[in-house]
Length: 196
Image (cartoon, rainbow, N blue to C red; front, side):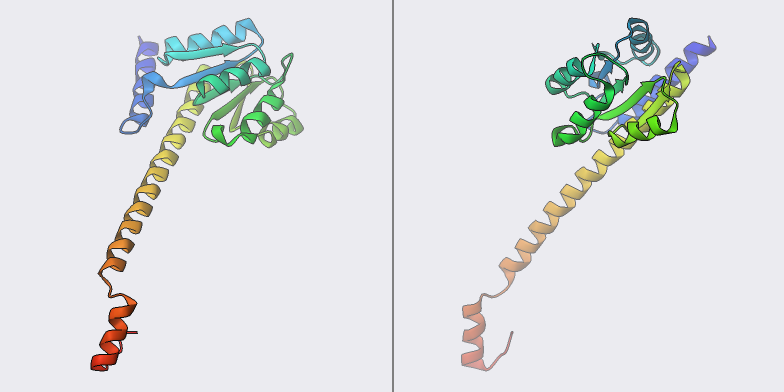
C-alpha cells in the first residue's frame, strides 16, 4: 500500500513538473541503451510500471541507440557505458556533437566507480550518472530533477524569445512614429527648429 502511494506521488510529481509546458508526460520519449537484458528489463519496468512512462524504446548498444536517437529524438536517455559495437562514451559524444540533440538528457548507468571514469562520463557530455545496481528511488528522483530543469530551461527560452519579439515590435513602433530625415531638415530650414 505504501509503495503504491509512493508510485502515485512520483507519477504526480512528474506530471506536475511538465504541466503548462509543451512537454506532455504521456509523450515523453525515453531511450534505454543497455546490453544486459536483465538491466534493460529492470529499467523498463521501473519507468513503465513504477513511474508510468509510456514511450520507452530500447537499444542494445551505442550504435543502435544513435540510430534510434536520430529517429525519435528522446527527451531522456539512460545509457550504459561498457557495450559492444559502440560504447556509451562514443554515443554520448555523438549526441553532444550534434546541436539537434542539445536538450536530450543523458543519465549514465554504470558499474564504473573510479574517479577518472566518472570524469570521463561528464567530459563525454553526460548530465548525470548512477552506479549499478540501480536504486529505484534514486533514479526516479534524479530523473525528476532533470525533467524539471529541462522544463524550466524551456520556459526561460520561450520567455526570452517572447520578450525579444516584443522588443522588436516596440522598436519598430517607436521608429515609425519618429519624423524622417526629410521632415527634420524641412523644419530646420523653414522654422529654424533643430530636432537632431
